[in-house]
Image (cartoon, rainbow, N blue to C red):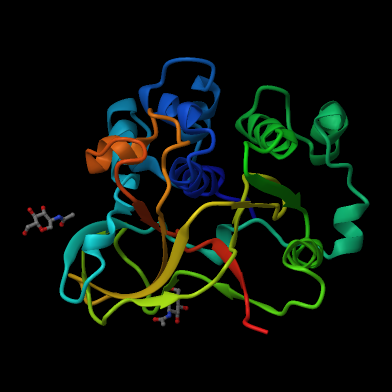
Length: 288
Ligand SMILES: *[C@@H]1O[C@H](CO)[C@@H](O)[C@H](O)[C@H]1NC(C)=O
Ligand SMILES: *[C@@H]1O[C@H](CO)[C@@H](O)[C@H](O)[C@H]1NC(C)=O
């Protein structure tokens, strides 16, 4: 089964955009300007999403995905807003490898030629670019106040999350789940219940990367964040139990971050909140 590269990259893109890290790169994806044109090819080479094969609809697609940002005042019962949720289709998700199998495959940009041969991808193909992109992202140094790691199996993700929280700490995961089969990517949703705040001193967000098997990119930032679980009802009757976060200190974010233009606010002047895509895992410690 071929993974849907563009869908994965797409969710990733929204998340990276949402996190402030790599903001400039992500914006440039939207503009199609500099060195990230390569990544745009990933979309255009995508076979699952014919509607978005032209560049203008591609741009539209990009803008659509930005419908994940909001401000804390939107988090109230009865509020209606357009939200984009990517579909989380298990049939196109990359395969999850057992730890031993993942550990037997090199995971380093220095092994790129070997990996392309190993997975039988030609150099310059969308898949090759995705692999290079993911390895590069995973090897980037964290930004100030950030902790990050990539995990190539569920087991190593759990180990690393546990190590970050402290070995005696129990933790749980929050996700966004579509309670009915989703048929729409973007639609108006209404907040159906008073949003529940999840009190957590720390959180680690993990998302899948475009790669031939499941690779989780996890990171955590030191600053005031608040997590919420929000029950949303779509215009089409769909229900989504969404995980959301509000970042209260955006002063260190790149001013070109998409959230600022979407919400029309300045860095540091307003909290920025976003919903998590369905393939994201948000780990929080349980109270002792
Ligand atoms: C969702 O769709 C899949 C495939 O179309 C189907 O097998 C499954 O039963 C559906 N689930 C629900 C809750 O409707
Ligand atoms: C959401 O509702 C508003 C107001 O009715 C409408 O203008 C807008 O087009 C709707 N958006 C979507 C994505 O359906």
